[in-house]
Image (cartoon, rainbow, N blue to C red):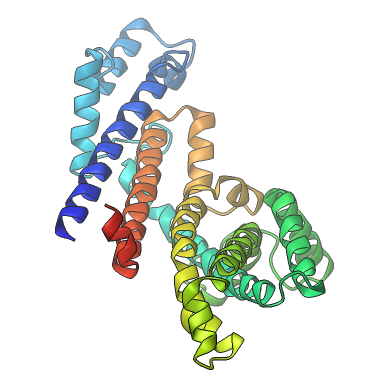
Length: 314
């Protein structure tokens, strides 16, 4: 098991290294001079030269990359030229919005998606199964920004039950929770549909396996055999999907946070791209990619711990 963990850890570090190179390369090939964009077209040449020196843009590309990556390793993500504060502090201010939103969305997706998939599998090919599959297909087809606007129209504008946008801060606990309800639903709906379909397919693949036939032969009812034997095996691919979903929900809040005017990490990245704040874009992007890779690594370890068959294959 230790050898498998070491192999997975080496793969994680290699992926992080490749991701850092790709992010740096993509930012370098963007058209335009970052110093010119920050100071404007009327900036004096000596001012541009001083800013390029301050940003390290007058150094060779390998030196720029080493300076950037070494700063990240010690938590120095640079300074935002829009907000004039360290990028790490800026990200720290936005994570308390994006992280709870991602967690709440995943919990909602699990709460509705997995039971829906179990219910569909238990009623395979009857009207209930077809209804669940139709609803999941509909949720997958609807863009989440359109669903977000529909939720705002119904629950904020028409019924006045929840706020249409904004975030009052965690000092106002009830108001903060109310502000995240509609965004969490908009993010969770398609993820719940994915979980329902994956759970249903995984369960149906296990229902006719030999161990299920043996369980029924021992006198277990269909439901008891499903919950005791089929469901634990079916949850292994579901666990992998959940890990990817959490990473997606953390990184994929850009559109939803802009719809609801939430001061989260997604909105920060959107604003930084528009303002060409490369320090914020690179730091936040690297953080999100690292979170995706680390969560995937942890999910792989959990799957290896749960299913001995995976350990035997490696």
